[in-house]
Every structure is written in C-alpha cells, then in structure tokens.
Length: 252
Image (cartoon, rainbow, N blue to C red; front, side, top):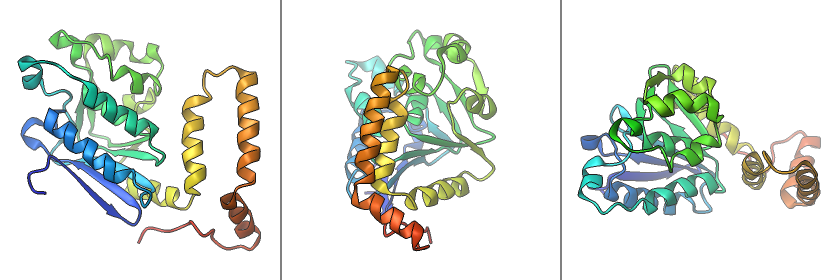
C-alpha cells in the first residue's frame, strides 16, 4: 500500500524488503517496525529463497526514532523480534545499503547474513553521544566483529567508512555497483540447495565457540544425515550426469 513505510515484493524466489520512510531517514519508528515485521511474515514463506533488505533515500536506517523515545514509554520488543527473525530466518538475508547507516540501523544491517555497501557509505554508533548505549545492536554486531575492533567506534561514536567496516567484518562486500553485487549473490544462492543453505547458515553461527568435541560430533551427525537427503542425492546425481540440479535457477 502507498502509505506503508515498508514494502515487500517477491520475484523469482527473492523477497525484496524496502524501507521507505524518508521523512525520518528510515528510523525505527513503531509504525515502521510493525510494517517491517509484516514484510518478514511474507518474506519467510516457502516460495522465498533469499531475503534482501534495502531502502529508499540516502540513509539505510538512522536507528531508533528519537522523537518517539522522548515521548515514551520505551518498548524495544519489536526491534528485538526483527533482529532475531533476520538472524534466524532459514533463508539467507542480504542488506543492500546505498548510503549512511547509524546506531540501531547498523544493528538491523548486521542482523543480515551478508551486507553489501558502496564505497561512499559511512557508519556511526551515535548512542553514547546522546547518553544511550549500543545495547541490543551489540548482539548481531558482536557475532560479526571482535569487541576490540569495535571499541573505538562504540565508545566515541566516531564516523567510519566502508573500508573500515569491511576490515572489521561489519560488512561483507564493498562494491561500485551495490545492486549488481546483490544480484551476483542472489544468483549464487539460487544455484545452491535451499535446505543445505539453511543448515549452513546455522553452522556459521553455532559452531564458533562450541567445545571442539561437541562440535565435531554434532557436525559428523549433520554431515551424515545430509548425505542421505533427497536433495543431496539429486545434487550428486546431477554432478555425475553433468547437469544442473533440480533446485538450481539463474536470475533472468
């Protein structure tokens, strides 16, 4: 609908979620978060294999809506739900960023599995400069970045660029053409087994920090179980028959 602050379209198994609240730089207002959770309801359906989160205007997301926070009462539950859904969705998630990102917006971006930004993008954890703390956003961000590499940006609120963001692991890709890079990533994901991709996404976030013996045992069981699946058998047959597997598709 025209009045929605978030739009979701599905095309060729790709759900594109667009933040569209330029008047407040796509800040995480109550209305925007409600629309975003509704968009995720659509994006998490079985016909979707990749979720892309992007935006209108020159700011991906400015963070919390400070006017609403001043009015109170403060309830961050919708934001927590959004972060959790992006991190735990079975589909891989990609943040397609075309401009600046601030505070809670970085948490939203970092909740995605892959993050593509232009060379001109810049970032800042501005919470400490208004007497707040980067609390909730630390959860998705610290799973991507070492705390020591975030310390200066977290503690000072300083602005930093795309190169530094990639260096510390906050973003995965810095591109001359963000949309073209996102298309390449989507094409690669659509060629992969959707069930295997979902399981691999879980591996990325559960194995680090797990005791070695427990991790090896769990991964042994997972590997053996997957080789017995219909998708794995189809994938192996297609390899020997020199054809693409049934789930593979190319972007038009």
